[in-house]
Image: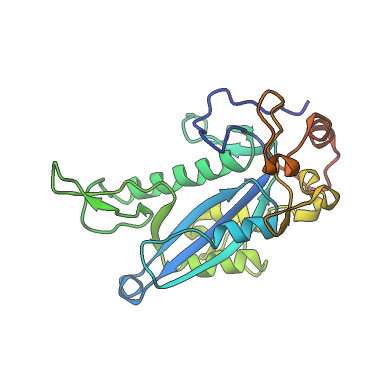
Length: 252
């Protein structure tokens, strides 16, 4: 039986009041020559609770740590009740059902594991693969603090991995794939937007000049807002929960 949406055990706050819902996950790079010469590029893994067009607009409106080239390399959907591996379980094959928020948290966790396996240490001034981007120097210790949550220093080959996975030109299990199989799988095996029930085109409404769907649920006890017009009501949530899928959600 499909798993109903719940906020139990979630770290989501603010706009992410819903867990296990469909949404968009995007991969953005901030490129500069100095970092590229060292073999790195800054990568952001971010999410939106909207369909592709609105998600791309959201992804392109953020700020970076440099004013250089800033490109969204890929934006793909994540459906609710997707089987997402757990990093805290001793059984590495164990999965839990989740949506776009859980997928983002999983990939951030994967980057953290890669960073630690590469003997990276928090507070180090030397950049290591999959290290969180450095924001500021601690007034207390004088060390650089890696306090970002969405931006990471990744091997520059990740640009090719993301682009090739998006275009379905990457060799599954090949050298490029194996730089970060988790990101490759997230992009390569993602369903198409028009296949995901929560992104049904007939649900789109125009808000601030953009036609979009918002996969969050309308809260009946809250004062209605302009954005609530794009959100899902109780009937839509049930439709999405029990809709027959043309794709597997066990691809991670």
